[in-house]
Amino acid sequence: MLNLFRMDLRRLLRGKALYILIGVLTAVVLSSVLMSDGSANIADLLGASGGSMFDAQGGFGSGMGLSIIYGLIGLLVMLFVCNDYSSGFAKNIFTVHTNKWHYFVSKLLIMMVAGGIMIAAFIAETIIFSLILGRGLALDNPFGLVMFIFQKWLVSGAFAAIYIFINLLTRNKAVGSIAAFLIGMGGLVMGLQLFFGMIGIEGSIITDSTIYGTSMLVGPEFDAFTLLRVVGFTAIWTALYGFLSRKILLSKDVN
Amino acid sequence: MEVIHTTALCKAYGPKNAVDQLELSVPGGAVYGFIGRNGAGKSTTQKMVCGLANPTSGDIRLFEKPVDDANARRKVGMLIENAGLYPSLSAHENMMLYGHCIGLADAEKKVSESLEIVGLSDSGKKKTKHFSTGMKQRLGIAMALLGKPELLVLDEPINGLDPEGIREFRRIIARLNGELGMTIFISSHILGELSKIATHYGIIKDGRMMQQITAGELSSKLDEYLCVRVDDANGAAALLEKSFSLVKCEVQSENELHLYSIKNSGKVTGILSAGGFTIREIFLYQQDLEGYFLDYMGGAEHA
Image 1 (cartoon, one colour):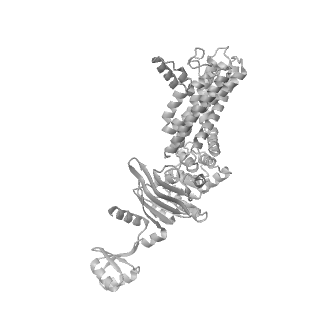
Image 2: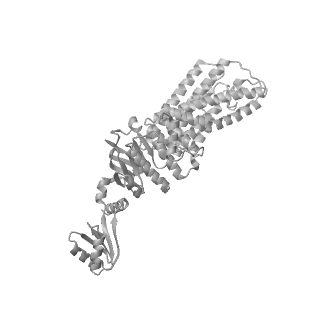
Image 3: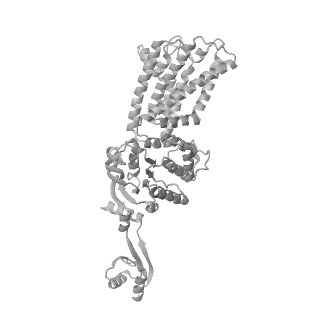
């Protein structure tokens, strides 16, 4: 497993994909700093609005902040998994690695590394652009912000798990890209919420339990109960998609 | 020791069995030529041996262990259908990734050595998507050899290689088998080339093993006869049968006859000339692997 992780780490750091995605992040950060007024603090720029997805405080369109990395991780998973299969390199991997579970774990870990790098880049760029453009760098609750970042990063594992599953199932770059957009940007969950609203059901209990909903629970004020929910839902979703991914890996042939 | 052994191996795609009750035995140290027409089940079998396809039923043993045994599979190198290469990476980077994948120590040095062996050390930063088919095949072979496997599974490895590349490939296989004792399980349509390196053969048809044979057994089965083209084949045959009582003579047409158990064309020419026959052509025909395969498959088809 460590060998696969080392291989993926080299691929991540020496390939172009991560750096292109960081370029995308840079554009997003710059535009959000430019659009912010002078009173916005770092927590606002990182999207630490807090509460449920549809809280009046947060609101769905209040800016993606760090949540944009979930969509970018989706694109990275698509590139990693689909290229393994389309190039035939998967044959090299699975001839030697009999335990197919290792493939899932390696991809999951590498995506969490990539998520960590993107979060670090997002924060650094936010600070740098704020300083350059003369925006405020107010930091009201440093501990709360650190915990916010940690929880956001933790949920990236569950996002990576569902993306790995979808890409293993379809091995299709178009499907992988659409999944990254719909799941990572919250389109799917928003659709669910609207559907529940149309049929007159309070659906936030369900949608808050989804991976995207879990990621939106996190706010700038640290709350132990929220942390427990985040850890719990992340673990459950990651385990579920890990199990399903393993099923796919065991049942589908490598061509 | 048998390096590969399959028992009643089956692989079904829908209602059709691509591999059907296959019994295959590859002894250690062999160069096993796996022969069959397109769609006969060669690649599917090789994929199952490498753990890339799941058998529908039956059993595969590698190095006398189950096919999913991690230690056994670590001894396998493969090149099946096409080289598995990331197209946007260089040859060196692809090799390095595979080196990490198999946990190769001192990967940088070993990768450079392997690229040197297949003549790709000067490919630099050129992406593999810009490689010719032959270059990709050579790189695939280098990759398969990277971990010094004990079993090498090759599917049509000389496709796309130029004559010089084919000769080099033959030399590499001979060295791997002769000096390192590597077992090689190879499928190829280029039977002339295969016959120069194989020590064992397996002929597969419609997913079923038709025949397994050693190179020695095969050579004793290959036809060998004197082909004589003459103005009156029937008359010439009668004369020769009178002159050589033990020679089997087959008249093929009005002007052609085949003589078995005799190789002395001078003696035959002398007798026929003395008998007043005009010889147009006389030569020793030796059936090759391709001829044997075609005859065998034709025979099997009509059986």
